[in-house]
Image (tube, rainbow, N blue to C red; front, side, top):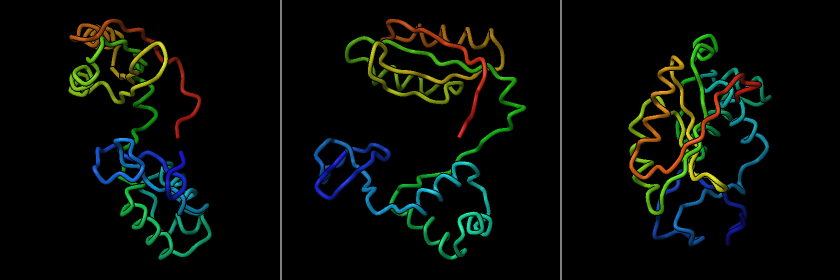
Length: 173
């Protein structure tokens, strides 16, 4: 998206009165990111705990360059946190499903708040198209996944759900 100062990308959406673009969300200016910044973010996505020295070697720059780049990316809210990636051996024993959700008019906020209270739902996104939301759900058994999908479908404001169980993951960045 183009704004007054160049390209912008959505960060954690936050309503701001001083938004220069006027969209009701604050946008992060991405024009000052260079190739090294993008490569650094990609490396951190692969392993957020990688030592600075390892990142510097992989990217062919000094440790201080990496440290200052990470600090700047954090200050600018481009990097907003780090997360845990569990072992594939643990994940493969879990049942993963995408649950497509249709909600009634003006019900999305309430449904979203209720789903956020469900720890087995790892991700909830608002989408365009036939469905209003897509949830990524993870459960240790088919029975527990079935119960979770039923619980989502029984929420006030949910009109319909359609689910797809993940058979295999080809790659995960």
